[in-house]
Length: 316
Image (cartoon, rainbow, N blue to C red; front, top):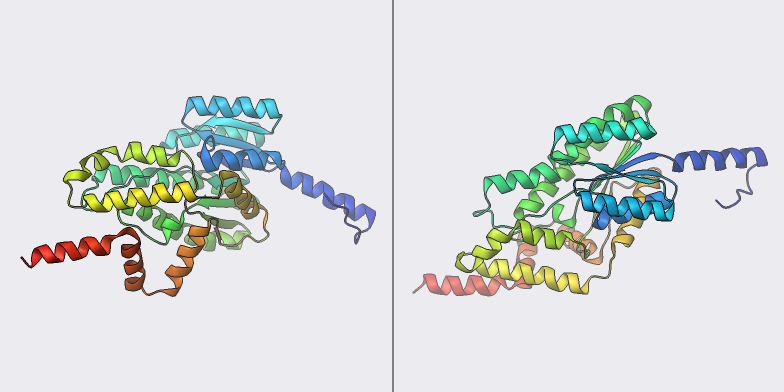
């Protein structure tokens, strides 16, 4: 910490001690053993936070725990499945027993199911919401009462630019993120009188394992795409993300630094955009009427040509 030359020595020491105390905050990161969550968990630990990284993947839990020991980081792992009430309760209780109440919560756990709205199964839509929306709600409801009583806490929710701007085939994922944005806005207002803050992270494309996981979760829809009336749209969206991933320059570590900013800003911004594509999409969504925005998406994906072909066929 730089010297605070404008303060008397006693006050400088007090500020330094308070800063060190603040950095020892008990922090829970869901989805914390891979991708953006792992990068954030490591950075927060490197900055002095006492971090607990939650995951349901035993192999990744073990790998991150090993890394933390090797680097002598204040980082532990905890088994946590955000889709299971009992798992959430056990995980938070374990954190509280080891380090006291959670003071920083980073809700990062999430999945992507890509499917046309007409074709997505109710089961898959429920799975999408159970992780991305209800999973966040479960953890929040478990930790907020103690935050509220102590008037101390910070919640950072991982959303996406897909929570503002929607691509075709990404409806299930975007719907869960739109819901998360609304819940975060409500929670921010509800917790403000208690001195608590809620912030949202909105990245665009960042290369992580979430893409491979999305392909696995969406395999049935992608496999049936050749016989689907939406086949060309599936192909266009897949190509869009493949091209975007190859061109992406933002890393998980870059996103982690934004998460750290959201944790430490006093007060934090309500929303933090991360990647260039997210910032551009946000600006276009704000500037353009919906129809004009839709036309831009259609042109970008080549859907305008598909529409012309279908309209021509209908006239025959």
